[in-house]
Image (cartoon, rainbow, N blue to C red):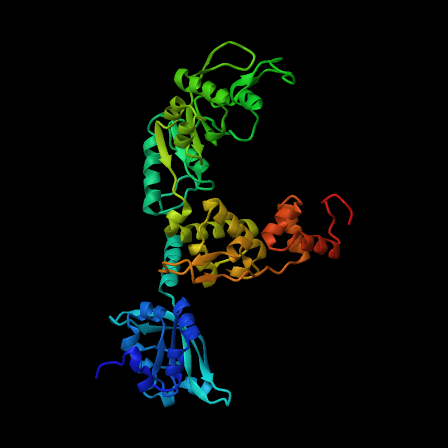
Length: 482
């Protein structure tokens, strides 16, 4: 006999199934929930089956309606195999099944790791109408955990350079470019978002180059004014300007026979662009306040999180300098484009923080790991490292949980998988961490007593931070009395 169609439900299963069929709100809820949900009537037959159950099991709604849940072959029902009859099922006796890890079998026969829990549905007279069961697919999470364990075992074997961590194909390409660039003295332009590891890549190139025993000088191009920046790069002679009380060599000369790394190269002014172009062309510099030309022997590596080509088109960046800088370009991927590296990075930073703090954190809870994998990481690897460090401040056990994460991660809203629309959405509930005097003092110290930053990190308002400081006799500044 063919399984019933949706229109036949009321005929085969009067009562609960008919109510579900006619209740638009219930239907919408079942369709929007990301976990698998199915409902049994009071005879143990399937009366409702949401789209997520179709994805998990491979069975469509029409294939399962009016069937026994025995067809899923759950390997654990109250600690034993599924009973032959619904009267023997423990759910009707105990009224619930607490979340339990078990296995069911897909339509094509392969096992699926899931967590399931169930509750009986009662009417106003406490009569059992049926059972509602929720099923969460653990396959993805278990695969991630296996990858993390494998990553931990193979940490010393992976292709890592100067702390750069990743085994994804895009990172393998980066490793190849690093090795290739080290074989020459060509000028390198490293492009990538904030926090992608541009300085680490520059350091790696220097470390494996023939200049590795010579200086590696780092200059942040956005940190100084134009006049100070010129003196910083080129040096100056005594009396060159007010305050130049003695002659000072610049960073280019300090890097002699080594490598100079110019970070945020997109921030330099048109005047400095001209001077840098001359250095690249002539391999010589002039200190501020003198006309003597000095030859330099250095490798120049630059980096930016800006699109220099766009700046050239806008006329704010010299085209000839741009092409001089990008003789050998290296593009660093965003973390959201190499998410398979996230478990490896998590393990690395947990190990690093365990060594610093003497803690014994082993990993992340399932919910926290899901957030780490779904979060877009606008701050890339640097943000992930900070998130782990933040979690170590709040974590009191052997496992990092949602409550230990930064507020922007705990309040992160993301689309459900395979959802073409903006709604429905699943939101991770915003939960503030418990705050103690010791934790607040630690946050204040880390944030240099900046209450606004403490507020951002903890999720409490600035007014609340002030109140807690007053309550616990914490001074407004570290050297003041309360």
